[in-house]
Structure formats: C-alpha cells, structure tokens
Length: 226
Image (tube, rainbow, N blue to C red; front, side):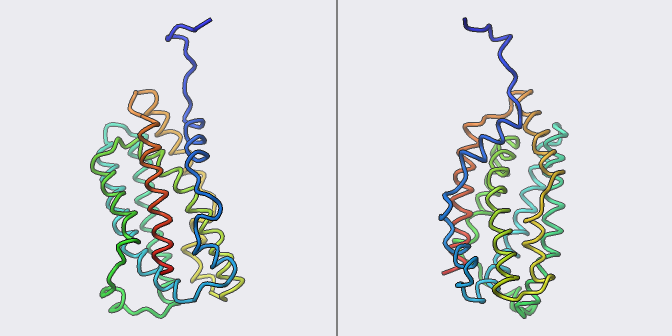
C-alpha cells in the first residue's frame, strides 16, 4: 500500500551526507601524486609547490565561505557551518607557515609566485558556488569532498614523517585535516537537516556540484605534481 505523502518518512541529514560521501568518493587510485608521496617516490620539491598553491587556495576559500555565511544569514545552522569553515581556513593558513618555512620559501617568493591554472580551478569553482548555489547544497558537496581531502592529508602527513623526514611543524597543515572534526560534522548535519526541513536542499544538485569538486581536487594534486 502506498503511504499518503503526509506519512512519508522524514529524510535525515545523516543519510543524505552518507550517500553523498559514498556516491562521490573518488577511485582508490585516482590521485597519482598522493600514491607517489605515500611510496616516497615524489620529489621533495612537490611540497614547496603544494604550499605555494595552497596559500592561494586558502585565501580564496575563506572568502567563499564568508560569503556563503552571509548568504545564509537567515538560516543560522547553515551560516554556522560556513562560519566555522572560514575560521578553519584561518587556522590552516597559520599551519601552512610551518611547511613554507621548511621549504625555505621567502616572503618575496611567496608574493611573486605565479599559481598554476590546474591548481586554482578548485577554489575558482568554489567561488562560483558561493555566488550562485543553494548554500545547503554546497554543504553536501563540500562534505563529500572533505572526506577525500582528509584521507589524502592523512596519507601525506604519514609519508612526510616516514619518507621525507619533515618536522612536526612542517607536517602541521596536513595533520590539521587528518584529525577528526566532530564539531564540523555536527554542524554539517544540522545545516543539511535545516535544508531538508525547509525544502532548500536538492541532493541531485549537490551531487552535481560534488562531482565537479572531486574532479577539481584531483586536478589540483596532479597539477602540483607536474
């Protein structure tokens, strides 16, 4: 018997987020650079390139998250999620200093660095989403991407210790993302549940955004390794 619409089971944020993470997960061997780093086969120079590119990525992403928080001002759970992300970018930029120092990069080199297009596609698309996408859909897309990103950071942090003899300070950026983030997970669920309850969330659109974010994520790493 078909249930009346009024008795349809309530969608839960946890289920929507779990589905996005599983459906959008990249193939295990998609990231060739992380595989090379994990085996100690990537040149040490990739870490300097990574740090220089991330300096630009973080600055752009922080602005995107701040804009999304402002757009979601009338939806506190959603705004709270993006506010926390923006604060996290500030901390990430601080942690990145350890890697920049370990790679002996000067302020002049950092300021004069010319970013690679393939590395900056991700934050550029993030800025596009910040301008035009439904914020709760962006939460889902980002949650799926963060799952892959954090996994990569955990692998790289371990390899930096085991194969490249980087100090704890130099590994701090990767360690930050390799650690569990229960507060962020809680805020993501609250934001998505708010979107589901108010009819703002469109999982199909979120998956479309998420697929592109994952593709640009892989493009970032491969461009660093070129």
